[in-house]
Length: 80
Image 1: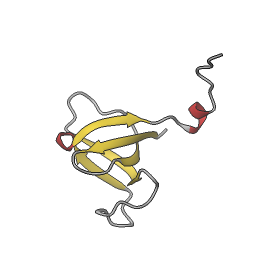
Image 2 (image 1 turned 120 degrees about the vertical axis):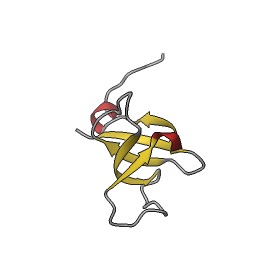
Image 3 (image 1 turned 45 degrees about the vertical axis):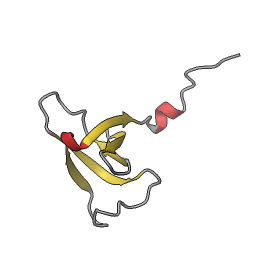
């Protein structure tokens, strides 16, 4: 099951994508499937028909894990 992520790359806009698995401690790169901008538009520096990109970790500041569609339906906190 693909995991939706938001990858913050050094000196660039964040990239929204999916990963198949979490990167391991010994990995030096990450493979992103269906890369796009945060608003869903195509990335300006990637061709339109590209479905996966590989980024080295030294270019990445941090990675946010986004909730899946099922997780968004879960009510996790209610304050009264």
